[in-house]
Each structure stands twice: as structure tokens, then as C-alpha cells.
Length: 162
Length: 161
Image (cartoon, rainbow over all chains, first blue to last red):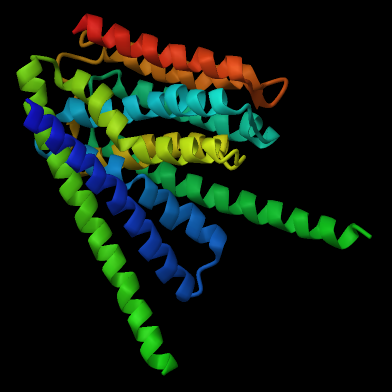
């Protein structure tokens, strides 16, 4: 038992540093290929930091441990908000942007509800998975559009300012 | 001279990416293998191990980043990033995994109790919205409430077995 716990912890260390190196290497590569920081943040960094979840869920699903794949995602999402945000706020109150309330959180909620609807038939099929994956592509383009708009507004404001 | 430096740094980038991918893939294999073993020794379900140990482990990067930023009194803990990461988890992780191999929910979505875990996920997605709606701030006491939610949820999972 102790050995498996230690092995599991070693696995976490691999996941942690693996993701960090992957993000570091690929964002540096993207930068030297002339990709803008906004796009790098939305694609390379976003995918890279999700790589541990992604590969763990893929491996468990391929090994037929489907409940680990689903549990990992649901548990990670609960952990990200209840534990990570909770702990961070305990150290220091966390301020947020109005756009988080108006846009980001409603989107997250809608996606969570959509997953609930997809899961009601007790499986996630290929077509359902394809709609989720199409969703992430749309979401990335949407975020790109928003950040371009915001940076344009910011530079307009800078021009208008005396 | 510059040419050599350029090639060296390109090589370094590729090495970082390769080592990173190998690290993540190896780490994932190790985590899943050992989690399954722990599951059998403890006599708990796949769902339990996925929701607790595995989920906690894959959220360590987010946890480390936030705690380090908080300890340094930096304000760069972005709720937007945490929220985005959750949206990403559902769409890209479950999207990709079910594209590669359809994911069955053995025992049924409602009967297996997974519906409760989904409800907790939806509740914890909604709670910060309620907290921030007026003040745009997650206060210390809000943080304590969130932490109690997490502890309560884990306690519920453990008691349920």
C-alpha cells in the first residue's frame, strides 16, 4: 500500500514538471515562430496546463477505467473552485473582473449543465465527445475575439488619454 | 555565431517539449496504475479514487500556483484562469477522451450516484458567482465557506465509501 502511495506521488511529480516543461518549451517555440502572446496563452498554455488531466483521463479511459476518467474531471473542477479558490481567498481576498461574473462563470455553468445533459443516458459517446471538442475550439476562438477587442479598447483608451 | 545560438535554443525548445510530453504520459500511467492498486487495497470504487486522489493530483499545478501567489501577496490569482481551466477540463479532456474511446458510466448516471457529484460540481461553479455578484470579491469568509464545501464533500465521499 505504502509503495503504491509513493508511486502515485511520484506520478504527480512527473505530471507537474512534465506539464511545466511542455508549456515552457512550446510557448518558447511558438514565440520564436512569431505567434502572438495572446494566442500562445489561449492555446499552448491552456492545453499544456490541462495536459495532466487530459492524459490521465485518456489513459484511464483506454484502460477501461471510465469512472476514473470522469471522476478526475468532475473532482478536478470541484477542487479548482472549492479548494484552490477557497484556500487562495483565505490568504487574501480575491478581486475579480466584472467579465468573470458576466461571461466566464455563466459559460462554465452552461458547459457543466451541458455535460450533465450528455451524461443522462449513462455514457459519453463519440458524437457527444465531438460536440464537446467542437465547443473547446469555439471557446478558444471566442476568447481570442474577446481579448483582441479588449486590447483594442485598451489601446484606444491610451490614445484618448492626454 | 547567432546561427549556432538559434539552433541550440531551438533544440532546447524541442527537448523541453519532448521531455514534457514523456513526463506527462509517464506520470499519467504511473498515477492510473497506482491509483487502481490503491483502490483495490482500500476496497473503494473507481469513482471514489477518480474524484479524490487522482483529481487532487491533477489539480496540483493550479493549487501550487495559487498558494505560491497568495504567499507572495501577489494578486495574480485569476479567477478567470480557474474558471477557464474548468471549462477546458470538461470540453477538451472529456471531449478528447470520449472521442478516442466512448466512456460508459457503469451502473448508470443516476443509480451510481454520479449525479450527486455532478450536482456538487455545478453548485461549486455557481457559489462563487453568488459571492462575487455584488462586490466582485471572494472574501476571507467566502474562502472559508468554499473550503468547508470541499472538506464536507470529501467527508461525504469517504463516509459513503
